[in-house]
Image (cartoon, rainbow, N blue to C red; front, top):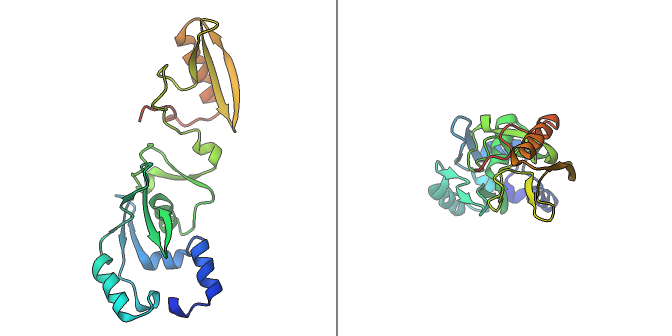
Length: 196
């Protein structure tokens, strides 16, 4: 294989700009699909400009946990060739041998839990059908709110970026029932609207 330092500048820029190839990813990292953990592998000299830098990197990182930093949004992140990657995307790519087509959904909603059984490749729209309830939700139910000017409970749902009005109800329980029926009709994930 061609050493990193001997790759043409255009190829190095491509690798920096785009997601690294699966072959290179597998040279750099090990993934445990049962636990979701990523570990740095020993790197050969081909990834470094000199032996000293190679030895230094390996003594600090090889065999140690990778992608342990928190993104600030609950995701685990790490760098490959100075580019920031999210651990769940890397885990998916290592396991399936391809980068995800769009979004990687954490089925249980825990953004730090990267077991392969918790990850699925979905569209942005499908990913939005498995979101948690916002912390500032007052009614306790997603898509249900109190209409102060009418003195009624309002139910609504957002599908493919478009909000659909489901009706106004005297009883909060009726608004919740209308919302739940719309969730089922529009193939929302059963975890959608969870508190955490």
